[in-house]
Length: 248
Image (tube, rainbow, N blue to C red):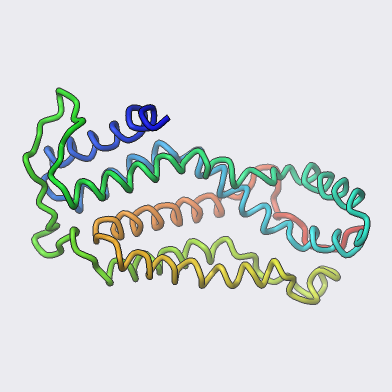
């Protein structure tokens, strides 16, 4: 399995990283271009995950009302929950599966950047990819991406907050029904994650080489922009979003 991962995922990304550096000998620009390329390849999967997350967030009030209505009857609750998912064409696993597919790519990219920024080992290059000998980790002649960089970590955290904020369901009006009276436990957890994830991004990013924090920043910002575009386009089968009213 490890050899398959190396050949199918890691090596192509590592060769792309080195090949781009041969063309543009600025590691910051290489990280930006590599991030854009990977995001473009994963665009359909990411879009599917974003739509699923948004749909689940919008459906949360009705799910909570079902829990209250069928408290103590797990069988009926499960049936009504699946009926609700089917009615609104929501796949509860739709946000997880695309992320699982992307995980090996993210891990490979992490190791590629870790290796490219901290070592000069170029084993595994394809014959047609020139060996640069070494990689200058200073970008724009100013920032050494081999060193930790708190500013980049903070910017990555802010991008994470922006992305999470767009997925946070707005509190519905009181007229929407019983689900609007109080914040549910899920809503409270969503708010906690809104601040927890960016904080973790800053803490972790501040301990990694600046190049990895820079990738994190680029990747998160591009995902947030993708979310913005998808949310503005809206769902073709739902002009007004999922109704957050009372379940009859």
